[in-house]
Length: 509
Picture 1 (cartoon, rainbow, N blue to C red):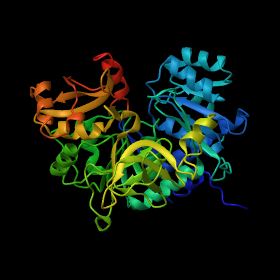
Picture 2 (cartoon, helix red, strand yellow):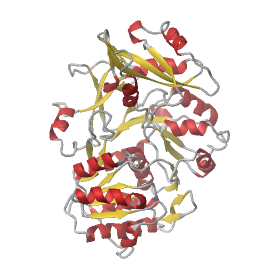
Picture 3 (tube, rainbow, N blue to C red):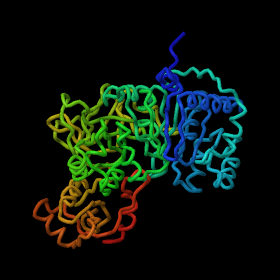
Picture 4 (cartoon, rainbow, N blue to C red):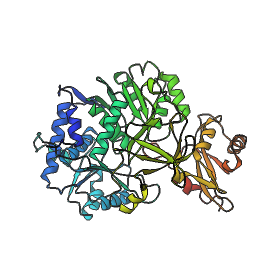
């Protein structure tokens, strides 16, 4: 009989021999053993099976972070269905689109949203709607408790669908990226080796679990290594720092690192037992990278991935493989191909900026019910067009310059916002910046800069622009610079440049 490639089977096989050891410890004092994870995921899987769902049924989930929500994910894999996590920030129109597009057989929502979510789901033809609260309440658990705690994992092949992740949809409607058991398992196995996961590692899990970073990279990493997790329902910098001495691995987005740096308790002593700090999901400022190293003695490992591909590149873990370089996302992971191409699709030499394309066993199976869009996003020779712009430097490190949709074409010249942001971020008093392109009657498009001052600093936008003129070609200089208290961000901390473009689109028209 062929090997069962169900991702859950691999995760379950990695559980430690002592099933009564603690697997998850929560920020409100609860402890879950490995046996608890096994039994509870079996009961939830048996509940799903009792619903007599069709093959490939989607289970859509929009709930607050909890260990039970994680168990529902494991149960969906275990039973052989397709998990569809939805951002907790999504509102009515967005949920209508996702439910209408994915046609889930099961929808799970928070108890307080049951009224409006169930109405959307039932109107779309979903037959089963359950609730799950972050405090272990809701109809899902009430029903699951009546089912057996024994379950034989459904047999799956590498190319069977495991999850659908909807992209953030900053340009046009969201697309459902279809990820297979093979995609997820191959990436988890590569990262286990590449990041040096070892016996006794303990992970601080402080990320949301509706996104690649928290749901796949962090969760699979800990489970595939049989590692205990210190679980935070919400990120609290003081509480996380207090727990660091009990941990060895932390994964975060740049915002989490800057929030911890604002706490005086963060020092070398707090990080004394840590093995690895990993950052991703948004660009890490070199300033944050350097300040973290100075305060903790640890060099953050920055990596690069996306919903469609999980992880693609990583700065090296082992010093023998090279240094971790701020401002880069490291080297292609083992088995992953990365190339940079020009407008005509030919591969560019090292150091030249172009479109980043990738291939490998981690690259998704296509967009849900969008065959034309899927075809459009792959090259004739099978490489996926990431939509990111970057370069591979002389030493082989990948550097992301921005998104292709963020590219500004001003008077026929290509302007890369990340380059200008790099100069702005180094200016006195600037904490962070964002540069976007807006319509202009003469140049087609011009750049507009939006900057956040450091606490207590006073910034003059016109002076910043004047300073840039001494550093950059004139066509790259933003026409206006606004000083604001904060930049619009999504839940993963990425700056929402589409909102900035919308806000300033009429400036010159």
